[in-house]
Length: 384
Image 1 (cartoon, rainbow, N blue to C red):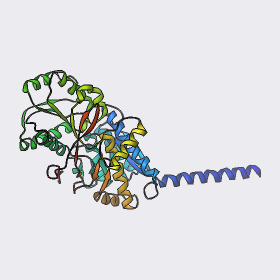
Image 2 (cartoon, helix red, strand yellow; image 1 turned 60 degrees about the vertical axis):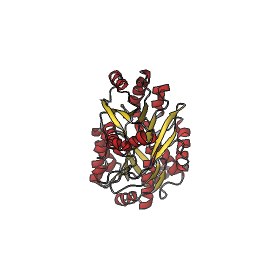
Image 3 (cartoon, rainbow, N blue to C red; image 1 turned 180 degrees about the vertical axis):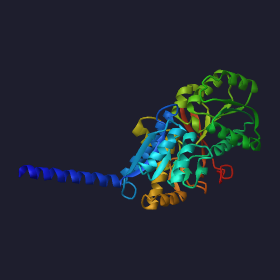
Image 4 (cartoon, rainbow, N blue to C red; image 1 turned 90 degrees about the horizontal axis):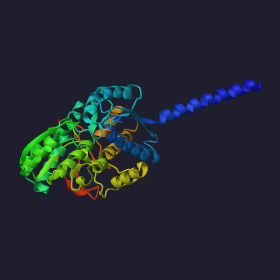
C-alpha cells in the first residue's frame, strides 16, 4: 500500500511538473536571432547580442510583454549566407519564433530575409545596410540606415559642415563599403567636393602601404574611408604614420572602442557617422549606455545599441498585436513610433528607417558628440 501511494505521489508530481514546464514554455515569447559569434565578425556579433540580451532583461524585469516573458533563441551564423538560411528555417519551423532579428552583416541578412518573407514571419535587420534586404518584402524591416543614406550624410558632413573640398575615397570592396561610397559619390558634387581618387581594398587587407603612398601624393583635405574596425584601425594608423593629416571620416563600421584601441593616438580626431550618440540627452539612450556598461563591463557601441533597438521594436509590435499572430505583429511593426537607444524609430512603406544621423568624434580616446544631420530630404530612405 505504501509503495503504491508513493508511486501515485511520484506520478502526480511528475505530471504536475511536466504541466508546469509546459505552461512556462507556453508563456514565453520566442525571438530568433542569427548573429556571428565565431569568425571575422565575432566581436560585432557579441556586442549586438549583448544589446539584445539587455533589452530582454529590461523588458522581462518590467513584466514582459502582455504578461509573458521574452526568450532569445540564438544561433551562430558566422556572417555566412549559407548558415543564415538554414538558421532562419530552423527558427521559423522548429522554434516557432514570433519575430526574427538579424544581428549580422548584409550578406547573411539578405539571404535570411527571403526565408522570413516566404514564411510571413516579421524580420528585423538590426544593422546590416544593403538596400536589397527590405526589398525581400513587406515582412522585413531595418532599424539602421541603408548604406547610401549614411554615405550621403558623409558628403554633407565633409562639404557643408567641415568645409572640405578635396576628397579621396578608400573603399572596402563589399556590399557595406560600396553602398556607403555610392551615397557619398552621389552627393559630393552638390556639396562642392571634388573626388580626386577612389582606392578599393579587400576585407583581408591590413597593410595599406601602396594606398597610403598614393593618398599622400593626392594631398586631399578629407578622406572618406569605409570599412570595419579591424581594417579601419590599421588604415588610420598607417595614414597618420605617413604624415597624412587630412580629416578622416568613417562610419558605423568604425563605431566600437576596439577601433580606438587598435589605432591608439592615431584615432584622435577621426569623425564618424553612426546611430549612437554617447552624449544624447535622451533618457532611453542614457539608460541603455549606463546599464549596458554595468552589465557587460565594457564600452558600448553602435551594434550593441542596434541589437537593443531591434528587440525593443519587436517587443512593442508584439504588445500592440496583443499576442503572437505573426501578421498582426507585422502590421503593428509597420506603424512603429518608438523612442529607442538609437533614436526615434519609424518606418516607411518599404520598412526602412526614418531618423537622424549622429556624428561622433574621437576625443581623449572616446567617441563624443560632434553634430547631428537631420536633413529629411537628404536622409530619405528608398521607397521601392
